[in-house]
Image 1: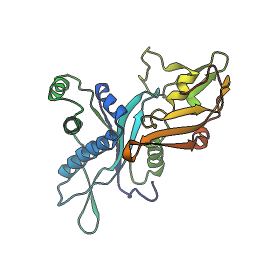
Image 2: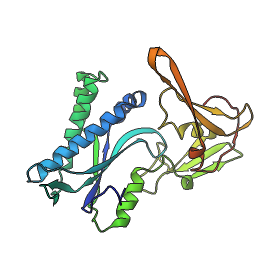
Image 3: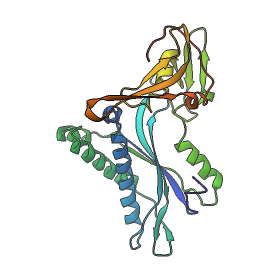
Image 4: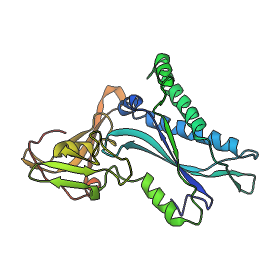
Length: 273
């Protein structure tokens, strides 16, 4: 990404988040994730274009939609690595944008998400009015510090971060006797689970089911290798509708997934996850 995509100009990292009450619509209709990405990009694009006093300014960006939180809970949000300004003119000149007012950017993003969900019949005008009356709407826009075009290490680390896997093997610990998995939160101040701790314990089978959950489409199933007390996931079968209301199944090897971490043998009952 850093060598073949990003130009040698200043960049910033933006994160666009939505309230918990709206996340369920994206969980059961994954096509909305592309719409969410469009809402975030259009909001940021308009803001940058208005901030740069040039004719036909154009910003550049790379967008990644993530659907997981720190403990693999479903949390759709957008990471945007964007130029800190706009290109303009026939020669590709670049002008840095002044600092953005995030509250105004958040308001534009909130309006676009509301309109998108309303047009698709997911929410009502009454729900929009209720959410708009909240002191803290749940929408949030984060803006990172400016990254210099000469700081290749910072750019590379950020690019890796926004396309990272949903979990880190280094923060995961398997308790074989108990059949439990302990997962630590990221090393960030104030990062805590619902019980106020910086780690969370999962039954091993629930953890195994949670890992691919952010990526699976509705109807996906995970099969163990055999009806045994010890099992290892070897394939993921996704079921989807095709023409004439018929269903099509596709089984994909889980080797690419399992290569990310050591195979964990689970003690307990097996069955479809």
